[in-house]
Image 1 (tube, rainbow, N blue to C red):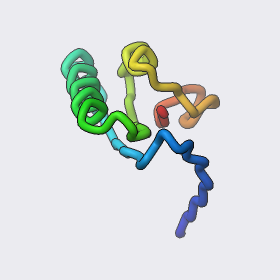
Image 2: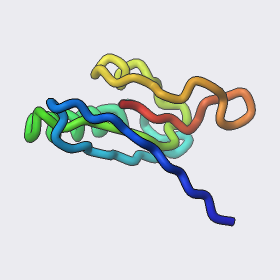
Image 3: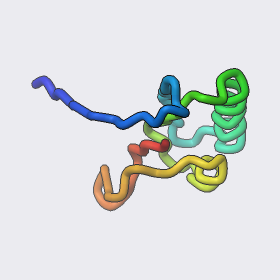
Length: 92
């Protein structure tokens, strides 16, 4: 079964290109280490190109959204993706 997704994204003139990051945080992983690594990567690439937009997506399991939202990124998934939980997240 093939799934095709089509998106039209408006990019303001200030954004020259988009950095897309994909993350998988396994259940039971060290959330502090994962958060530090994600934020470190975001900092590194944001400093290297201040005009790049950022999209971070993946399966974050028990990883807290708070540090990513404080970055500031916004969570785009508003409804549950697995039962009553939101495991698959997209931040921009």
